[in-house]
Length: 161
Image (cartoon, rainbow, N blue to C red):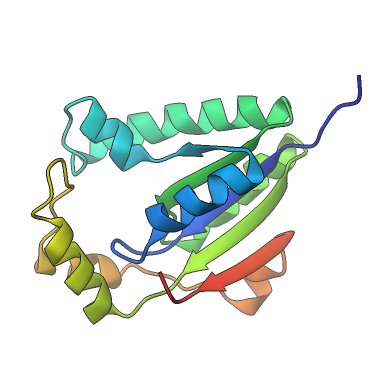
């Protein structure tokens, strides 16, 4: 039996940019497991804005991701990864287990993201986000540089989700 290389697909972007929509489209084409911390937290009846719980869940998801990558699986992580230090650590951790790493950047203007979130806030089970939260979080966004992007096996920019 030959060993297959794992593939980590990072779907990176701010809330409302279309990460989940893109990840759902990519998963069947790649035969990938899709991991979305918001969906897991909501599914468990937990507040997705509870940072300590989110941190613990994301750490468990990361351990699970690395196990899957070691087995040669494709895994899609759609946790946002707004800051470079987190993206760098994720890239390094995937490389440690011999995985290829792709980055799909979903980059949509703030006003469009707010329009989408405002509509989504009224859906059952939605992770409700306020305009103030969205603007505060936008200040933490570190758009990947060309130098950073050169470290990935595949990079795709998406502006239409």
